[in-house]
Length: 463
Image (cartoon, rainbow, N blue to C red; front, side):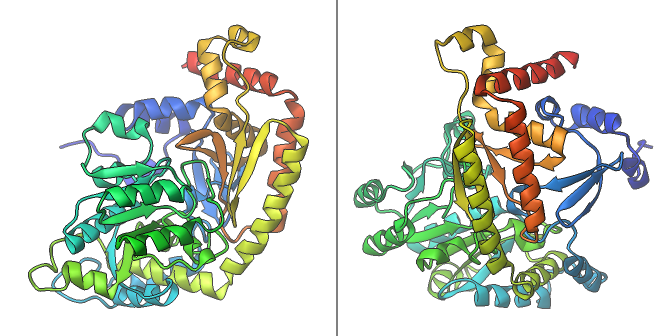
């Protein structure tokens, strides 16, 4: 009989045992990367904006699972909803469950314009996959236009519209007839639309992994107008920006834009259950899946299961009842203002940008090519300090101030600040004070990068 580890065994593992099992049975190189900035702690409890490690230390979570924790860790109302759904049939395809029907109804009420029909799945990448298939079957067209710097997921279709070569190249050739254009460039988009008879344009209202890139005022509205002009569907990916994150229920609402397809996930599950979805118009849904012959062409075994949709129902109720959209708008304006003051004071900060509580801090690259600093630093040290400045700052915040952040995937010189929307002003101030302490104690960009880089190298060689 195989010797299996029980749940009690798993919950009692030490930090060293956890690291060992991850190295042996999961992603060895990822463990090495996380070890560089000490992201290997064993967290044993979580509530609201805070988590605690196995030594009793308290941490403030300003990463928020990349926008999945809009309600914080283990929100009580969502946990209560799961208890109510406990014991109901969770997966039963030979029936019509009331819970996905109720959640789909609620999504039709809170999403913009005439969006009505929902397809449930398990993640943001799956929502994007479903949206791409939807516009292809509805139009009979293959081409899709996406933006450089975009991140829509790493499954094959989603990766085909993810605008960073680092993730695409190892898996080439990807899906064909996909064209990229610069983000926030209406002229380039119109040129592409004039050349390609596209099924759809897909974009994020704010590019998350691209480095929290906010477009110019009027860009989203202009995209909508161009899609209408060229009779092309518009897919808006609000997996990270949705459900209040930007101070609007959905970021596209800032400019009154109604997409043809809206992709959501992350915080829809209340930070507890995995759930994704796309919502589309009645017209588009019926073009794609409106007949008995086509209604089962795209399905998901776990999509719309009772537990996940119960969590989604509760999550929307909390957002509405606690007025988190308005609170996020107000707290976001306050936080951006305080961060702007830091930018004026510390030249290490190149830019502060974002909307609501989706904020990016971009740092200067301290080591210039051909400089004396480059010669003194050494190749590996310069790479660590020059390309991963965000990781260095995140490491300082975690290890010295117990604040959890991380850099963005497509721009590692940017750290993201995406706390739960229930965050308090006092907690926002705590992060400001911690950042100021990091920059004060490491005066000079190069000295900070050099000292942090050496610390990271020390950890590499210890292992």
